[in-house]
Image 1 (cartoon, rainbow, N blue to C red):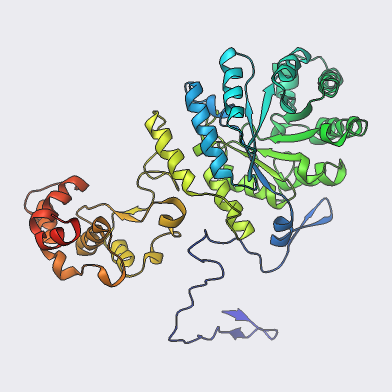
Image 2: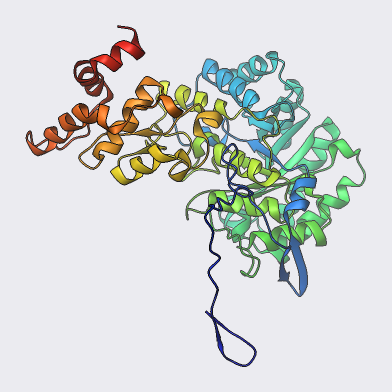
Length: 468
């Protein structure tokens, strides 16, 4: 209830209908739920009105960049060369013809690093573009140039924790001068530098970050456009927050606003790199897109230093939700990547969104009943179409007859009017109930056990649909 101008309580009238409103404009089912704004969202930063809206994101060339082979290897044993080539190939397929996954980065220090880079480039994929990663050391550009790369990331730590306590500079000016010497070396080598402002969400923004970025923008004016400096904002410890009214240095909207509006860094030269220490890594990346940062840096399934980075699959589905279109993305490659990662020993939790073995598996009977009536009741989108993963049910003491019916129809691959009803599944459902009530079973029933019992207790259907 609300109050009118005279202070009287105003009730909300029921809109009665016999036809359901399934909010199709937001939940189309053949796409992930769309991110839509009813009106531009306006917040204030330093007294200035800052607006973001969906049309703005649709018009900008927002992209995903990848650091699976760099940050993604800092939380696990190194990938073999063959594994990285396979992953790169699948990343290219996921990226699609428009290069949604625009770039990836490689270490360049060892013989294996350079062989991996060569073999990935031999595949001939346009996207993701191969770039390098080096320290802010002039000598490292020798490796970049020898590899023939057009762009490299370079570590330019920005907080005083790093400037004074890690890098042991005596002053901020000494630090800035050192970084700028390396940027000059990149220009001389004909390589575009991508400055990684490490630990920016703990840095003195007004006292160091903005003056440093001002200087980088000034240096970029004297070189060709294709060499102009890119800026990666690195939320190294996951302190970033997606709210405009949070104080610096933690506000992602404020950081992007200041670099974009005050320092003049174009959106296509800004990139966000986050960590998940406080469970905000995905929403922080999407917030960066909304406030004017074109690139969000991700890793496959979020694997990276400590708590990891924005997961690529999450960014892919947020990208589609913002654009309102698949944009040529082959989302089924996410499932192939998950299967491949699991096969080489990378543990993906069973309930991990989009990729875990049981991410769209229900164990609750009431949920199974809903799925049986209409998949959309308990499935986030058409997971069979977008991920080659139909919704499943795990049979436990909580599954009920509805769960058994759903399992049977999925097992036989039946849809629509061909689906088997509760009555025909009753013998199998009775066997499941007896497992728990009479046998005292505590564990879930495996698919293999259910197959054996289905063949025995539903022999007519088995013969019809399995041809035996």
